[in-house]
Length: 215
Ligand code: SF4
Image (cartoon, rainbow, N blue to C red):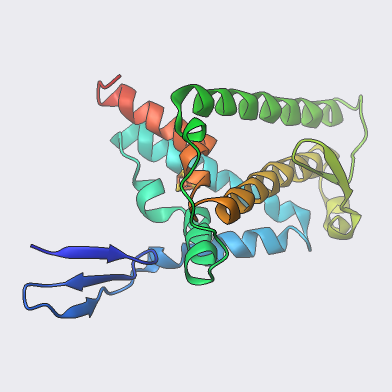
């Protein structure tokens, strides 16, 4: 029998039958935290890169819908890896148990609903710019409340339609907000506490349960 002590994504140490500790070979997907970190940094230089974040929406949903599995969360999510790295290896987490209410179904689905309403709000703001009833706002809204001037990353937006830029500002706001929430709960509790109530995780879990006929 093998005992597995998981430290970092893909960085497990195996205590095999002979009692030896052997490093598990890292796979390419163990480095996806670099992609997540790069994405966040690029948003400070060119807001249009925010569009790439849609990949993190469609791939997990696609895998859950087609295969009925949460492989994205278990293997390919760079954001989860990033929290594990910062909270684990870099010791930025207090490593305390996650409060019970965060794990409750009612909370996870309430947070998902809130998140989707705010997402719809962001899409509506994009539509208003598309319909010429509102002008482009070069701001990133953090935690759905704080409007941060973000004109320094807007140089390239002159070459695209204003609604394309508006969506980028809105979507980057969503990504930055979820990262900040994830970092706060990472510091307060376990490194991957965000995964307990992450809307994408809740959605894919719900889809997998429906697909696999579980309640
Ligand atoms: S729950 Fe969210 S953050 Fe965690 S691994 Fe899944 S998609 Fe990534």
